[in-house]
Image (cartoon, rainbow, N blue to C red; front, side, top):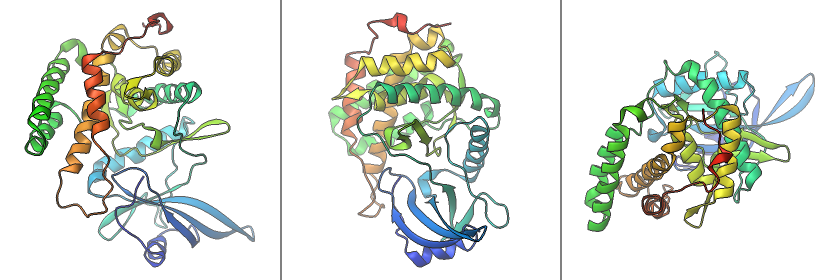
Length: 334
């Protein structure tokens, strides 16, 4: 979550006139993330004669947040996940029954604020919870995969992104970008890889998109990257963040995440075989996404930009020292 468009009390209050959630009492910007503007807001309303305070997340969908079709799929996705009991946001309807409204010529989404806080230093139990969530999420979203758009970061996106950032990076980086692109293009063109299980994937399940409380995983947010993709890629993206430690993958945490996932949705033998290549794929796509933002010159000076070097180093690590479980028997494949 982040703030790109600065909002005032009056501006938010005017937008809330399209909803029936009470009077705006306070608001504060959310600071994490890089793609949409998010504020935490608190409203006061009357229920059964009592004054009630409720917390919401007020989101302005910025340019990088996706198009109308993607948002419609996201709404359907959240609805299905809610029905399945997954801890995802509940979108608030407007007075006219719509899931979104518009202000400043941008889409506005409001959802109930989920309990919990972000985890900075994950432990095994956190990784297990993420593995269980992803397995349940993938099983639920298979039913709507035929309606959803493909996950955007495919070979064409990787190629265009490399071409876009090449003029702004060093010769060594250009060589490295092309080298990894060649590896991944070859990987994703394989017929056995193309047969791997797919569903709607989250695509961005980092620590700043999950919430934990004393009971465990209490919420998963930010589904703007969701699209039909390889389930093993979604797992790899999560491992790259939840199990990373000083530039390497902590095997105990990674094994815990994989084992928890596998207990609900058993991995196939091919998925286990290609796990490391998908770890490379995940790290490379986020290295590129950060480079793409870094090289844009039309963004405001205070636009949140994250350092691409973290994922550049992780790409190097996956390429030079492929991750291997020393106890692969902890994952039973079908």
